[in-house]
Amino acid sequence: MHPIDLIRKTRDRQPLTDAEIHFLVAGAAAQSIPAEQLAAWLMAVRLNGLTLDEIRSLTLAMRDSGVRFDPHPLGKTAVDKHSTGGVGDKTSFLVAPIAAACGLHVPMISGRALGHTGGTLDKLESVPGFQTALTLDQLAAALRNAGAAIVSQTPDLVPADRVLYALRDRTATVESPALICASILSKKLAAGLDALVLDVKTGSGAFLRDPAEAEYLAALLVSTANAAGTRAIALLTDMSQPLGSAAGNWIELAEAHNLLRNQRSRLTEDLRSLSLHLAAWMLHLGGVADSPASGYSRAEAALANGSALDRFLVMIAAQGGDPAVFDHPQAFHRPAVTHSLIASRSGRITAQDTTALGWAVQRLGAGREVADQAVDPHAGIHFHFRTGDLIAQGQPLATLYASSSVQLAEAIPIVESALTGSDLTGSESATASSSIAPAPIVQQIIDAARASAILNS
Image (cartoon, rainbow, N blue to C red; front, top):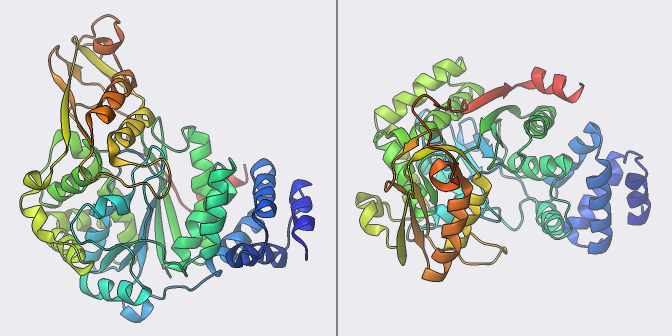
C-alpha cells in the first residue's frame, strides 16, 4: 500500500478497506507516514467524510494502535462518562464517585483545557500532589482503592490519536464528525469499558452549537460504540449558559465538593441535576440499576448518605492528592487579583454568549492557547445569576479571579459583552412579566434505535 493511493481514494469518495485504514493508523502511530500525507488524508476526510463502516474501522484501528487496559480482573463492571466539553462542566467530579459508591469501577481518561473549554485534569491538578499521569498498573491500584480514577492518556495508550489529533489541530480538520468520533471512542474503548454514557453539548457554549450537528455526532458515537461491543447511550444537554456557578480550575472542584457535601444552591441545581441524570444512566448500563429512574434514585442516595463524598476523597488520596485542602476550600483559594463586576443598570439577563465567557476564563489564566502552556489553578469566574434573572442596578454579576491585572483588564469587557440584557445593552428595562423559561438541561436521550434512525434519515 502507498499513502498517496489512499489519499486519492478518500479524495475521490471511494471507501477504504479495513486493511487500508489499519495501514494508515499504524503509520501514524509509528510515525512512518510523513505528516504532510497524513494531513492531506485528514483534509480529505474533513471535506468528504467517511462511511459508517470506515468510521468503525478507524475507531478500532486507533484503539488497537497501542496497549489496552483491562479492568475486568478487578471484578467489577467498568463504566465511564464522556462530555464533548463546555464552560463550567465539572460533572466528572460528581458522577465518578457516585458510580463508584454504587458498585461500579470508573476508569476515566480525561483531557486538558484547550480553547474556550476547561480541562478536567487541570482542575484536579489544582489539588497539591494530585497525579494524573498514572501507569496502567497504577490505574488498576487506584481503582481497587477508590473505585474511580481520573487520569491522562498514557504514552502507550492509543498513540495514533496523539499524532492525528495534533495534526487536526494544526490543519483546520478538527470539526469532522468522523474524526471526532474515532478520537473520543478509541481512547474510551482502549480503557476496556463495558458501558459508556456520552454527554453531547449543544447551545452557545458547545463545540457544536447547531442542535442538528450535535444530534448527528451523538448518534454516530452511540452507533459506533455499540458496534464495537460497548453499551452506549448519549444525552443531548444544554450548554447555553455555564454549568453551575463556577468556571475555572480550583473553584470548579470546590463547587463539586460542595454538592458532594449536600450543600445545594439555586445557582448549581443544573449541575446537580445533570450529574444525577448521567450517573443514573451509568448505573443502568452498568447493570446495578434496573432502569434509569432506579439509577437516579440510587445516585441521589449516594449523595445524601455521604458515600459519594467518601469515594471522591479516597480517589484524591489514591492519586497522591491532599484531601485536607477540602477542609477549608475558601482558605486554599488564593487568586492574585480579584474583581467584582457590577450591573450598570437594572434589567433581565436574557441570554449569554457562553463561548465568549469560556474565552474570558481562559484569558484570566485558567486555560491555555497552546498545549504546553501553564494554567493558574486559582483563576476563573464565579457567576451570581442565571439566564432569566432580574438584575438590580449595583448588583454583583460576577467575581473574576485572575493571574494579573493585565489579564483581568482583558477579560472584563469580554464578560460584559457576553451578557445580553437591558443592564448591559442599553435596551428598555425588563419587567417581571417578561420572564424567560430556562432550557431543559437534558434535551434528548439517544439510544441505539434513535441513533440508527438519525443516521439513516
